[in-house]
Amino acid sequence: MKKTLLFLSKICFSVLLTLVLLEIGLHIFPRVIPLDLLTYFDKTPRAQIARRRGLPTRWDVVLVERDDGGPDFSVFKPFTRIEWPIRDYGTNSIVMMDDIGFCNPPQQSYHLPEIDIITLGDSFTTCHAVDPQDTWTSQLADLTGLSTYNLGQGGVGIHEYLQILKKFGLQKSPRIVIMNIYEGNDFRDAWKFYEHRLLVAKGDFQPTPTPSAGVVERYSYAFNLAYSVDKNIQENGLFFAPQTGDSLSEPEPETINFRYSLVFPDQVIPWNLGNTDTDEVDYAKQLYLLKIDAGVFVTVQEALATFVELSQTYNFVPVVTYTPSVHTAYADQVVFDDPALKDLMPWFSQVQQEYLQQMANKQGYIFIDLTPALQAAAQEKGSSDLLYYRYDLHLTPSGHAVIAKVISQALDDLKIITKPDD
Image 1: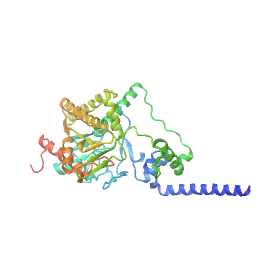
Image 2 (image 1 turned 45 degrees about the vertical axis):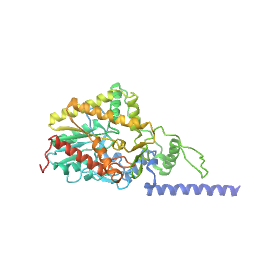
Image 3 (image 1 turned 90 degrees about the horizontal axis):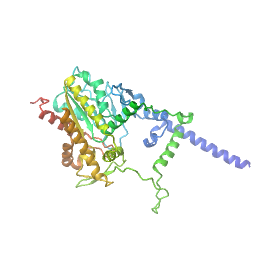
Image 4 (image 1 turned 180 degrees about the horizontal axis):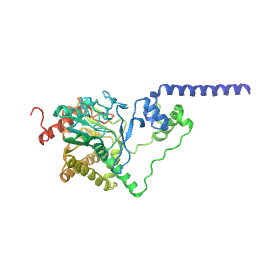
């Protein structure tokens, strides 16, 4: 009996010592925790770890007061340092925001009395995975000789662009304001805005309650890690394949497979290996099946009309640009893993392009569809100089350069600007 108790006490001590060492180790080296698991952590340790790793947290942003009844959104505080978790080789994952909280190189200062060109957009406008001087906004300054300032903010949509313009852009008396709409999620974000406004109008909107957490959940990294592993297995399955080829537990099938390959003459490049941005497919499917309320397009139309009204009041030229997703820019090379997407995704792209052109004809803004230029550049550059990143799906410096050149030429052709050498 004594031997058994001694044996059990040794086991308990070993387990306790292991847990203590694991807890200490995770607190000292939080970077060893995979980001996929960090998402399951309780909010308190998750925020602490994210801040130590340089990831964006609630401490790095400030709410923007809005006047259109939309949901809360934030922009970065001045001099916020961000380390994006980007897997692609050659990306700039660390960036410092300027003294206003946006991504601009020192030569594109917000403190000029007037700024010629203000740009609006999401992560396809701001410096996501590229240096501030490599964004199409910054390169546009080099090509035109005009002053530019990038008010891009990731994770927001068309309605939020206007709120940012009102708060930060109009007081700079811009000659031109360019609103860049991204094919993958801007109409989806408009859907979220529309649904939020409907709930508020019905009186059904309730802020998401914050669940209470116990002491262990709030302070123990080891407990959160164990919980996260278990949660990840429950949601994604545990795949184990012995050499015999048999599997003990097959993963649950994914409802959406948004992986694809780009087929070039010299090589085939697998793309979107992480199967991210599947909500783009989901939104395309729901739109195709007419499951999306037509009121979404009404809210987009209202936002575009507001953009034009602001241009008339503040005397600037309103320009809307359209940036396609990877699979649209590389339409001649793309092969989807899911054959059903072969026709769906081009249709989804075409619907958005045609809608924005129709609104331009109706409301009077200038529309620049960047799709043809990016498709031509994709053909010309091939696999040697890619316009988008494989994992992150955002624009490379080369992609930004193509956009800057197209916008500069379009503004010149329309006699909106005069280049220094003219």
